[in-house]
Image (cartoon, rainbow, N blue to C red; front, side, top):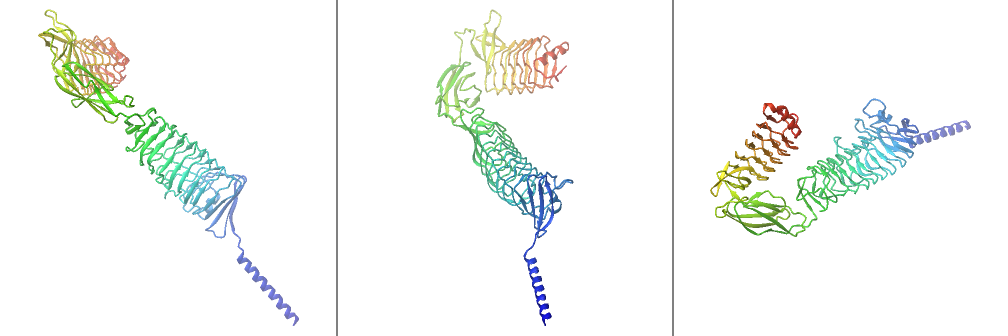
Length: 611
C-alpha cells in the first residue's frame, strides 16, 4: 500500500512538471537569429524574427558602416540584401553608428525591399552614403538627426513609401546629386508639407527634389548660393518659395512645372537665371530687388511682367528680354511739341522738340510720324526736310503712357531772289533736295550736291544735271547723310556727273538692294554704305581711288563685288568688315594680288574669292 502511494505521488509530480514546462514553452518564445556578422570595423548586424516574412535588421556598435556595391551588381553587396532583401520589415540603427555606407539598403532592382519598413536614425550619425536607401520602400516621416553633415547622391531617390514630412538638420552642408530624385522610378514621391532647407547648406544640387510633387512650399536656408538644374522640376505641389539674399544662380528648369503663382521676389544677389527655370508655372510678376541678372528670354512664361527699381542696372523699358517691364519711376503724364506751328519753304529742314511733362520723367523715349508715316529720329528732338508743298501734320507719341502731341507745318514754294541764285540755295527736284555749291560761269554749268530725299519714295534717280532759274547745274556729289537711315529706299541711281559720295550717305538704308558707283566717282566717304544689310551686289567705277573707314561695314549680304578701278590706293579701317566671308570680287587682272591683300587688311574674310 505504501509503495503504491509513493508511485502515485511521483507520477503526479512528473505530470505537473511536464505540464509546467509545456506551458512555459508556449508562453515564452525566443526570436530566431537568421544571420549575423560584421558591417564595419566596429559594427555588427543581426537579422532576427519569429516569422521569416517579418524580420528585423539590427546594426550596433561604434563607427562607420562599410560601403557596398549596387545590389544589382556582382561583388560586395550588403549581406542582408543578398539573403533577406524582401523579408526585412524593421531596421534598427543603434546609437554609436557614425555613417551609413553607400548602397547599404539599395533596392538594386528588387521589389518589396524593406516593404513598409520603419526606420529611425541614431543621434551619433554624421553621414549617409551614396545610394544608401535608393528605391527602398521605407515609409512614414523621414527625420535626419542634427549632426549629419553629408547626404550622398541618390541617397533616398525613389523611396516611394515615404509619406510624411521631411526634416533636414541645420548641420547638413552637403546634399548629393539627385538625393531625393523621383523621376522615372514608379509612383511619385509622397513626402508632403512645407520643405525647409538647412541654414548651412550652400548648394542645392541638380535634380535634388525632382518629381517630389507633394511638397507645398520651399524655404531656403540663409547660406544658399545656387539652385541646380531641375532641382524642383515637376514639384507641382509647391505654390510659394522665398529666396535668401545669398542666392546668385538659379539653373535651367529649376522650378519648371511647379505651381508657383502670382509674384516671385528675387534678391539683389541674383546674377543668373537660366533657360526655362520658371516655365510652366502660374507666375504673373517677377520683382527684382537688384540689378538685372543674366537671363535667357525663355526663363519665364510670356505673361510675366518684370518689375525693378528705377536705379537698377541692365533692365529696359517697356520690355526686357521680351517680357513687359515696369519700375518705380517718375511717369510721363503729358507732352507738347515746340514750336506748335511752323511755316517754311519747300526743301527747308525744320526742327521739332518734344517737351515732356514732368520734365524729370525717367523714360523720355518718343516716336515721330509725318502725315501718319513713321520717321526715324534720335531721341525727343529731330529734324525733317520737306520736299513738297502743302500742310503737314507732325505727331509725337511717348513710349511711357502713350501721350500724344501734334504740330502743323505749312510748306510753301521757294523762289530765287529776282531770278538770281546764290550758293547754299536748296532746290527741290524730282523727290530730292539739292544744294547749290558752285554758281555757273559763262557757258560753264554750276554745281550742286544731293542733301536729302523724300522719306516716302522707294526709288530715287539722281540726274546728271538740272536747271534752276534758267541755269544748268551738274550734280557732282552725294552729300553727307543725304539718305541716312532711310528705311523706304530700295533703289537709288547715282547720276553720271557725281564725283564723291559723302560720309554716312546711305548709312542704315537697310532695304537698298544694290549699288552702282559711276565712273567719275573718286571718293567713297566714311560709313557711306554702313549697315546696308539688304545690298547683295555692288559695282565700283573706274576712277575710285579712296574708300574710307567703315564704308561697307555690316553689309552682311553683299556677296558679289565688281571693281573696275585699277587706281584704288586706300581702303580705310574696317571698310569691308562684317561682309560675307565667301564673297567674290571681280577686279582688274593686274591688281588681283594687291587688292586681295588690301581687302583682307580692311576686314574682308580670308576665304573671299578674287578673280
